[in-house]
Image (cartoon, rainbow, N blue to C red):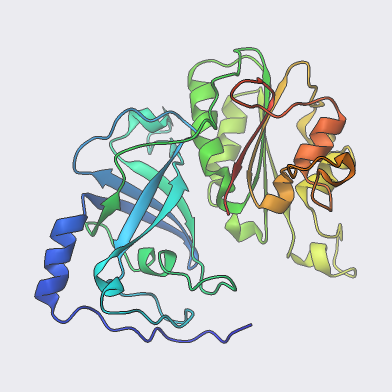
Length: 325
């Protein structure tokens, strides 16, 4: 692994040039930031002009100029003069505040801003992290780029009012699930709803308090959390040692159904998967059925063994997934 180094790049020649680039490219401002901890934040962005209607579960694109500074202690970056005057962009699913300061349930359409759940990437083996080290320098009022369009079929379109809904996520992959959850609850969904998030540490559960409050208000909702790097996950001598808790193992053992209080059934359940590709386990497109799935088994394979089917444009199903990388 390459060492973590300070950035080596220089900003554009003058502050005047940087300000002109911002005027040319930016069309939104930071409405608020909640730092869950130093490497995880909830970012609220208000566009200059309200974009077309967003459907819960969809994503859009954020961007900043390569000319902007990066946080310290990140992988070294070397850029050409031409690149220094361009935008770096990335797609992010739109999350949801869930609850307002007054305790009122909030959907994505109830607020003037868009909410994003973002993890700082300091180092990557595949490419130098460019956007998140810049996003983490932002403060309320700062300007940035926001796409005016939303994308993805990862929505509640096929879910009926009394269906059971199971959201499975790793880390910030729960962002679109928060948006869909708020819609379900606000619309009086009568089926049971379960949301599971697997993170490294408990401190990575940025929406935990709000989910617990929602559980208290909606008897058909349950929020379950798993960790992989707490003492009870890695130290056999730690009190309550359980080992690493991955969603796939939790599901296969039956513990997930026990935690929910109900078993996912392909006859009445929609499963939504977002986050780490290893958790999702999207099948390969091959002619050999023995090599269809990545190994170890991901949730797509485990669900299909129980009779679930992948949702496709012309073949409706009840497994829906959104890959994060």
